[in-house]
Image: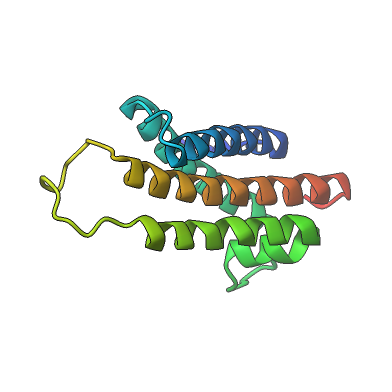
Length: 152
């Protein structure tokens, strides 16, 4: 019995990534302003979503890499996307790292499985959500444009 791997289309990847980016951006702003602290189910869904988008985006980009290429898929995506999208993606990645260093908590917590998400933790998590979903947008855009140009 042969198992077939189901992969999203470029448009589906773009839509899921754009939706995730918008939701994470809104939640990040709300966390920064301390207006709303998200429900745990939404946090788990968005965190799982970045893993899904990351794997799918990598699969989309690998279609356009040369056989035996050793470069990472994000480098291929950066090389193939327009400059504005490349720099926007780089901005979100650097913002996630900066946001992490600015908001990391150094006090001891209540254990390894503490699901009490503080404002600082919410800001950190949502910063990484934005970076991963932006990578998904870049990969989906590149994949869509390459498909329109006739590359498969």
